[in-house]
Amino acid sequence: MRVADAMTRNVQLASPNDSIIDAAKMMADSDFGVLPVSENDRLVGMITDRDIVVRAVAQGKTGNTMIKDVMSAEVKYCFEDDDIDEIARNMGDLQIRRLPVVNKDKRLVGIVSLGDVSNNADIAPTAEALSAISEPASQHISGVQRPH
Image 1 (tube, rainbow, N blue to C red):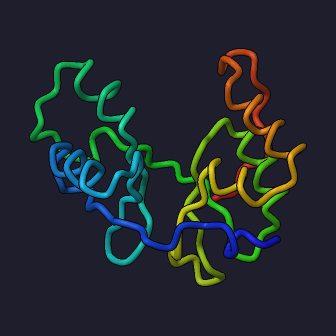
Image 2 (cartoon, helix red, strand yellow):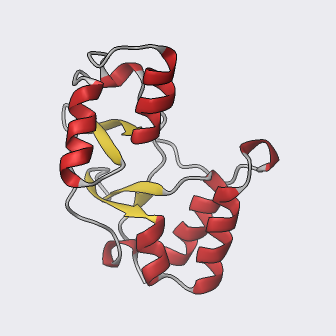
Image 3 (cartoon, rainbow, N blue to C red):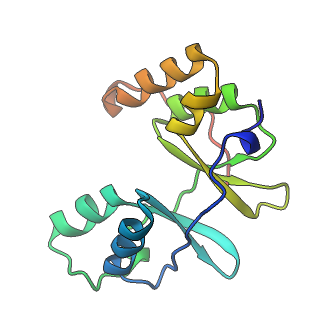
């Protein structure tokens, strides 16, 4: 099965110049835990609810802090025609629960989550991905990463 058959297509985008309050409201309104960050029609980062808590709130930053100050700028992604079982393995290797999905022109077309994968991939790759994601990072060996 291809990633396009499992991914979520309804994706809310944030701007790097939006505040973390704006990001939190978008996440709450849409019930998402992650937002792709886009500038000039290009994916420039990802911000998660955890980024807001760990990189902003825990560091004493205010709600007016810009997304670009706490987002992850190194974006891992997959292509819409990638095999879902292979993506499950990559998610485990990278210890991530969500990946933006791009087309061949590297334009964002969706997001695939571990939940999407578990509903559509074979059991073994999904179980391996969940197990790897749950390991402490210090015990983890990083896998293949795509450049952005």
